[in-house]
Image 1: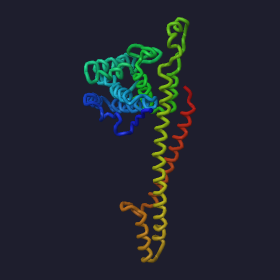
Image 2: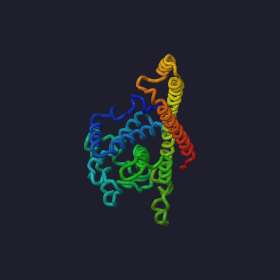
Image 3: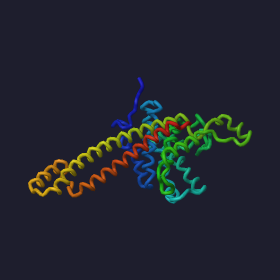
Image 4: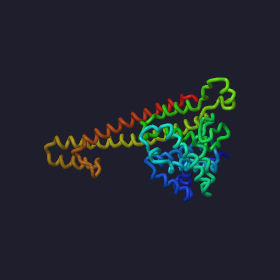
Length: 313
């Protein structure tokens, strides 16, 4: 029987379910900057979902997700001038940033409770074609958990808006990752012989990348469903306030005090206690603006799914 893993289930591996020692390390990340801890949580979330879609066992999924939570703990020893730099890093600064992998590895190896998860910090920047760091490992020499985390980490890093770059859309991000999954160009025969074993490999695993597509589509469908629920709510709200407006218009047009009081009571049947009858036209305009914006965004999300389904790795 196939084992399933529901990240949204209360038994799933989330940061508050982690071992106390691991939660302490994550707490330390909170003080680094506005991005590192959020990035860590997002990478762990995506990693967990990838494991599920790859049909990994629950035990491996929990292990791999925990590795993902710890993948950037070495950054707490990266100088703030580098970690929080608002512009692109220089080559020298990038060499400093790269040390977060070996620092994180040593932190794990020096702590018995963190040691089982050392692969997360150590290998998550290795690339299948040997162009990664810290050791330039290739193919199956890179633990599979690290290959999964790399895909999650790369996607989150590309799409996240940081102080030194603007937001990149999902389709553009996936196209970048597709490029990273393609074999590198070989300049000469010497390189071809030397790289024979990895000649057909890119930086990231194609199967894992295709699985990321499924995760994103599933999340997008969930977002669409949530937004449709809200659109349905807005539809009912517009009907409700439109009904109130009919009686409001009658109330302000009648000369009969008796009818005015009658219409006023009818209005109360449609408005909520905090709503002002005088603001009914404004309320309707605001609801309609919100309705139009949500409908347009839903259409955009449907189009995004179509585009993702057309992507080829």
